[in-house]
Image 1 (cartoon, rainbow over the protein chains, first blue to last red):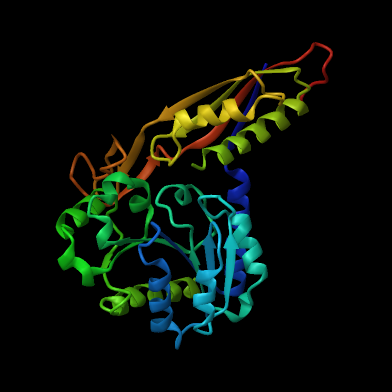
Image 2: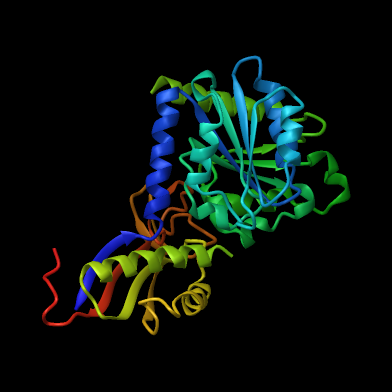
Length: 219
Length: 122
C-alpha cells in the first residue's frame, strides 16, 4: 500500500518560521538574516550597521554560533541588546531557535533585529527563520570565485556585501568577474562595496536597509 | 552537513504516517529533492543508512527523485531549465528570473505493508 504524504520535508521549520514572521509583523519589527563564511566580517559589519542606524532605529542582535558568547558580548558592549544562541555543533540556525531568542528580547520596543547566522555558506540557505530579508557578506580575501562554489546563497540573497575592500591591494580579487558571476545567479540584488573597518560604503548599505525597514512598516 | 537533521525529519514523518496506517513494514520512501537545494542525495542516502536501523523504517529503500532547476524570465516569459550556476534567461539573456522548479524538498509517499485486518486509514 502506498501512503501519499506530499509533505515538505522541513514543514516543521517552515511553520515555525511563519510563526516568527507573524510575531515580527505584530510587533512592527524587521528582521535581517546575515549569512557569510567564518571571518568574512559579520560581527564587524553588524556593528558598523548599528552605528549607522542606531539614531533612527531601535536595534537588537541575535548571535548564532556553534559555541562561545564572544559575539554577543561585543554587541552588548555597544549598549545594544543581544541574545547568543549556541547551536552546539549544528551548522545553521533554525526557526525554533529564533523563536526562543525572540522570547528573550523586548520585541515591541524594537524596529530591527539583526540575526547573525552561523558562519557557513551552505546549510543556512535551506532554513527559513521568518526574516524580512537575507543578505550575504563576502570578504575580499575569500576570493572572487565564491559564487561559483556556493551558488545557492548568492542566488537567494537580497543584497550582497563585498567587505574588506580596503584590503583589495593585497589580493587578486577580480571585482568584475565577481559581479558577473553574481549576476548570472541573481538579477536583482545590489552589490555594496564596503569596509566595515574603515566605514567606506557603509552608509550606502545602511540606506538600503533603512529603505527595506520603511517598506515593511508601510505594509 | 545538515543532511542528518533533514533525514531525521523525513524519518519522523514516515514513521508517524506508517504507524497511523497500521503498517507492519515500510518498504520504500520516495522524496523529491530539487537540484537547486543545498542537499546532496548521496549524503541523504548515507544519513538514511545511519538513522534507520532499530526504527520501523529499517531496511526501507530511500528513492530520491532529483528535479532540475527551472525558471521563468520576468522580461519575456520564457520558461527554461538551468544549472545551479547561471539562471539568466536562455532566450533573451534577461537576469531577472523567478525559480519555478528545483527548490523542492518533499516527502512524496511511502510504500508499506498493511495486514488485511488493519483498520482503514482515515
